[in-house]
Image (cartoon, rainbow, N blue to C red; front, side, top):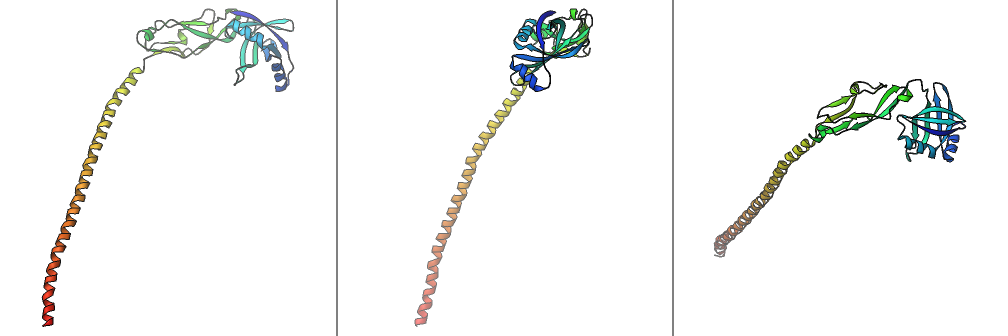
Length: 259
């Protein structure tokens, strides 16, 4: 548990206008409240707060000493609001705590070791929970909770019910999964690629067959055209032979009329 001091000053309230003016002076609008503290609008230096959070390593499991108008109180950060475009802090909620009363707080989970299911069997470690909610006295708040995954094989998992933290009550659902080692999925990708290869070969054979069929069809069309030309030539010859015969028959009739 880390304790870092933060200096604050009271500020005027009344909407977005006063809050903008506070940000314009390099401070962040904030509020402090608690079971024994009346909600109070305050302002803290953005530079000082960034340094405090960096020293604490984040807000999880950290208790800050808030110096306000000459009085000190122990607080934790309940919420940080940020600008969606710039990610700059725009508002802070501080929760004043009593060192003699348990509080509910979330702490980060850190995973140690390399699971044998990942190292030897090619599995994939899937992290389901990265924070866990607990209840304890402020002096017992751990900075984080370590989970060793070394002995996990493929298909193995750790649930909340498997966790134990000294002097701490875990509030999360005992049936929730914290981490699981899943089987690799690369085998399915190779199978799909193998099935695609014959399909490409069949497509190539189909294209070759289509190319072979095209010349054959062109040959048939050429033969039909040649046959048509020959038939037309035969008809013309037959017409030429019949014409003299017809002329020969008509000639004797004209001679008879002269007689």
